[in-house]
Amino acid sequence: MKKQLIFITVVFAVLVLAGCKDSQGSEGTKNSKENQSIEAENKIGTPALTGAVTDIQGVGELVTIKEAVNKEAAAPNGDTAQYIYEVPVININKPGAQKINSMFSDLEKDMEERIGNGQNMTLFIGSKAFLNDGILSVIMEIKNPGPYGIHTVNYDIATDREIGTKELLEKYDFDPQNLIAEINRQREEEKSRPAEKRRFNGDVIDLFTYTIITNIYTLEEHNVKQQEIENKSKEEKERYVMENIGKIKAYINGGGKFVFIHRGVLEDKELVVDN
Figure: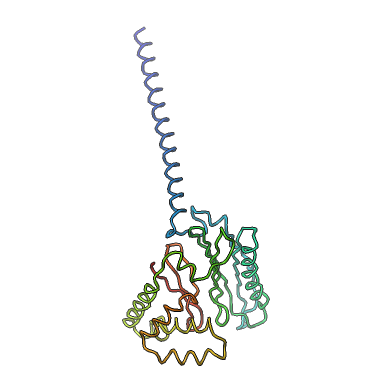
């Protein structure tokens, strides 16, 4: 009889402990899910935070990066090369979103038609997307000198329209002085590099004045305006960039920083700036 009582007592104790453990595990899972939900809600509601295609903010549901081309063909030098072209597709069935999709699709098709003609030097086209407080930034980079380069679109989901750089910067109260500060920081950094390791051909501010002039003026007007700006002082060039900052392509990356696109020696380049 005493042995039976001991056995029953032990079994009861084990059941109680197991029940406590399950309760704690269930409560821990519940708390974990609640914390993840709160974290996601906070991230979505914070303008400064961004997300890449696969993160918690659901950019992957809004934008698909489609591999339009993956094939071997003749390269300009006669060798066989692998061509890989990615195209971003906004998964929103509205006129504004579809117009943007058509623009990116046309860019890719234009390059695809040139494959195998012995002149297409673009082996890779990469695409990416970021989400910021209802603004989708969609980017396609065509690795080719000339009229191509980095193409960016900032799409307002609520109003189904593309917004320009000026409106994007105003939305986040971006101070143009921050861009100038980063340009000057890059200038000083370049000075400390050996000549053979410098990343820019000339002064960084000149790359931005050149970019603005290229984006504003016709080919006939370009050279005249370029000579006019080249003769100005550093301070005048900086003022020119700040006054025309809306003419520079820009987007916000996955780290919550502004990225400005400027012309390089052969291809477009990105300059990341803190807000």
